[in-house]
Length: 75
Image 1: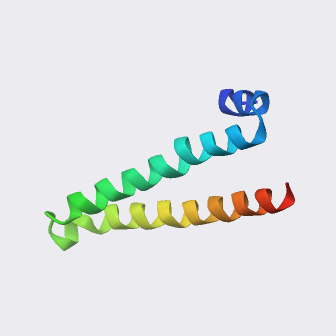
Image 2 (image 1 turned 45 degrees about the vertical axis):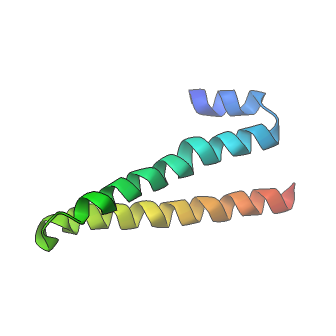
């Protein structure tokens, strides 16, 4: 079991959920924002890899949010 999972298991569900959002999704979205901001000053060809990374991160965050919503519905 990872450190994050062990820590989350010791917290109440609402605290664990808020930590997961803050430490996971929000950090990812900040990183995507930084990638997109950097791309504003980058030639299109050079930014293709960064755009693919940002797109994949957003898709993963959408999946995580859907999973979190399902967990909230079940609670």
